[in-house]
Image (tube, rainbow, N blue to C red; front, side):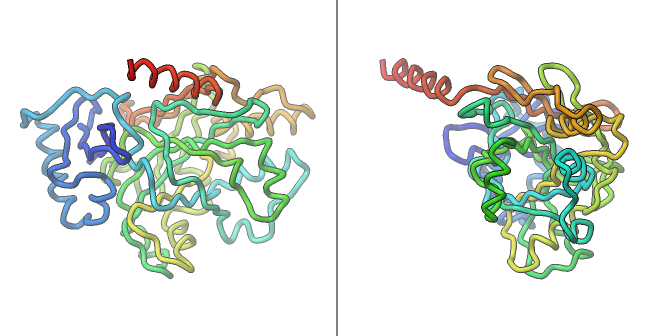
Length: 342
């Protein structure tokens, strides 16, 4: 099934079931008020949501409405945890090669993982608000999973049973802030602002044969200003699969229902599939030519991230965002507030 959070003016939105073709929806707050509430009681709630999903696809309800993607928040607008990994080693290899560095010891044995910004997650049509273009604004197209409760020390061969939903992510990075933060030894913070989620989250069965219980075997596509940046296959070259990432995250702590785990930038060793982020494209240019020609995102730039099924139909809906300056966004909000007051 496909689930979303309708923007009803609350922080967490209204749990909504979305049709398979992404054209229609029906509110499900009579079953659970929010997606987090559904995840908290998944075994009881999910069969009811599945029944509603089947009714929706059959057109068997008078409460169905036409879906407008601009009305949707992130499926989890504020998650309890966002553990972001780097499961595609070619991504890290490219970046470090461009810097004249090697991968850290043990990179092929254990995944890299850090705590990302879990509150808020941006909606699929929300602006990327940045303070300065000089920060090196970048996109990273990722696959994300949303877990149920995961016990501490879970074995990797049992971890897959705790995957409840999958989403697409735009893990926004401020590249020029990263080196100084990492040099302090405490990891990312200011360089990792809020990420965006796809309009809908889907249960694994919606992926059909493209889901093998561990990886998604479909291309993930990203565009910048209408130009294709890359379309690497998410099932290829994923060094650490999702059960492995869950086991790594839960090695010393339990994970609560609603934990989001990101795959890291989807990337293939076959570079003809393109790049999963602008930094990869720049790294390729540095390796080949000694310097980068591709710029990071500028104010006004637009990005799109989407995954299509084997029939060419959108699975999660598209993330479509524009980069705006923080002061411009603040002025717009002040003007809107004044107009509403009048």
